[in-house]
Length: 349
Ligand code: FUB
Image (cartoon, rainbow, N blue to C red; front, side):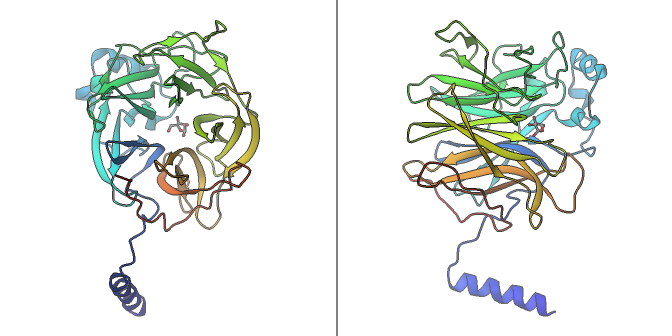
């Protein structure tokens, strides 16, 4: 009874004092992972992996014969079989989120059948492109890899842009998963990607539908930093490129985020250590993040997934947002995970 009274009293006091609501971590209900945060059309958008386990209704009527065949081949984890779509979330202020269901679904990607993972979104000429991994291929010759889908709305529906995977084979040992698209100041778009402890970067063509060679004639440049496992991400700040990535196993407690700094999109990158690790009082398995800069400011936020302290299932991951701060020398301060989340941050108009 005392607790109930306190909660009501605190709520009333906050309302009287006009204290803004905090985001609360996790920021949305449900099991999601690998959030990519972007700003499109004056709103924040988050595109995550759907990360539930075995409770999704049977969707077999949606699968073509080819997709059914692919699903019979093998799934490393049974839960990958229900990862057949992405939901997205939009927000005006990082606090209030609206769910957009099935922004991409394998109904619109004929070669994708399961393990649809880790989307990365970018806008070009009024169209929105969603890069994603599908089918968790284990060796060359299997159908799957990194695809690209397109929509005229950030809320989808996204449809396969090229009718086949953009990257469908292993190069430099990198499993074709976990894409991240980065536009440099000169307009060139790079695709960073790779699982199985190898990270590659490629140049994308102007229409974002194919890969091009670098001036030195190479196509798949390996830039794997020490400790790298998967989930690469890049930001540029004050002329410095920050390559970020996840380390450890994604199903375990010590999943984490590390980074390196370099002078160009392809490096060389100097490893600078970890910035996000488990917190025994907040959550475990924190990783596969993304970062957003508030336009016109030097304020940065990190979106990431983490596992509640009382959960052990690999798939049970939740989305969180916290502040990411820099030191005067440009290095990144360790991120403090919170349960409270961040204050409302409307975008500058
Ligand atoms: O969500 C599926 C996989 O888990 C991602 O591709 C990995 O990076 C890990 O976060």
